Length: 413
Image (cartoon, rainbow, N blue to C red; front, side, top):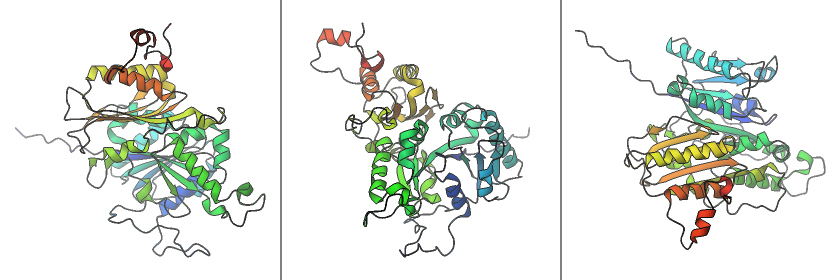
């Protein structure tokens, strides 16, 4: 009898979602990444600094996207912005006549499957995919596809979300458009563009110059605002050469260098700290930033699988549309030596992945929540009610009346 040899299991292809509001510079950034750095980096006029940063110490990764397939989504019958992206070895797929956040989900699935057929049949060779969304798109539907499609979840893995922010018009865009704030809140990397168009603070710029009198002080204020919205995301200055492939890509769970999970880097729990306690509430509540919260939960003890499933189901049912993103590594009582990685966007959860072992010395449950119009206390009290210690010195009557399972931790009447 001839032995059958199973085909080798292919590692999922990393996929990056490139988003950002209209005019932020997504296509310019993508075009620069596709070209890669020149052999002799040019100098910035008058400063003598390279616009491309030098290689990082010990960096062994490629600094270009020559092995990348790109899917471009543009709104309208003709994707005019596609003309700004150079054709690279037939690796670009253009989606038109719609928007990723509504009618084009089927087309996106077709495009991703078409790329896989070309790869499997030897007609194309690529090792990663980038999806550039239209500036008006909500990135959540793209993530939903990667989390729920029965075949694509096996062939692709989300490497990260990269959001481009215009340094000149970014503050006004964040004030006016809730989608722009959401794009920032869910990002793994933030790329700041057009900082070279903003003059230094001295001498004071004339009105109408440099983005309506914007100066470097406004850039620092924008950076602080981005950090408040998304404490864990690295902010990269494109004009300073920081937004190269080595810094933008490979921000997912798995470290491409050694192929093992890097939970600490992926979660970046320490970046959140008690940031939600220090969030200012005295500004205009109509400002979109005031609706976004980012916080982390930790628990050292092992959690029963049934109790954790109940917790996630309660959170999703109560706050589903406002759960912008949830990431975590969980220590389950049934398998304490094999942590489970969870990743959810709104009411949908990616199939849980069990790791063979703890990748670092921290063996505690760590979860990061990015939410909209949800007070962190509501989820924190629910978490503590199921897994945490009993609150000390709490009168029995209050403990019965103040039910943590009620939305926002309100009084159960």
